Length: 297
Image (cartoon, one colour):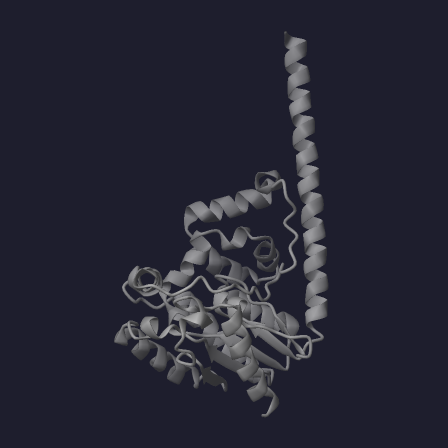
């Protein structure tokens, strides 16, 4: 009986070691791909960054000397880091009123740091910035993140974490049909109502750092207000617009930037994936406007 128990424990440990080894090999492979992608990205003078709005809406054709590294739910703290790592001549960052709201901090609650690329990018942050993320991240999610670092096998998945958009990119979506009243209500509640229109101090802090850094490094910084469905735009609380305009005015004290407002560019549902994200047709139309404007200035 004792011998069987020893054999069972030994087999369990061997399986555990095999799984651990596979995971660590995968992580090393992921990190190598990320490093290579960063090296490749440095060759592009124009960098598109931000969250799901740029991820859905920043279409790049083969003739454009630009790269899109936007990723859904990305916080400005990581947008700032990507700018510092890549040092483009021009950077376009998605910026709409909802990107300053408190709900953006939910990216940490929902496990953003456990994504392979953000696990990697976290390791490139200064200790002070890591501490800031620790303070903003819910304790339970932080412990899950740290546990996956201490015991990597806890994060093992059967399929490889390597994807084509490991550091972000463009993801085109087809139209899902008419945007309904229910769609608009749900989205308004998610991005504005849940926290009663509170600003995210974390987002605001790093937005200012982005402006300051780009000014110091003479990087042309363009914030892009992405198109919103007209029925969604009409229902955004006046308080939110007031906060947003006030923030843009205050940002001028941090450095120079441009704000290209396309929030009311389209009034047809066929351009939208949902109330505040473009589909593939909308992304191509908007990106043509942006790059035409960029090339003529």
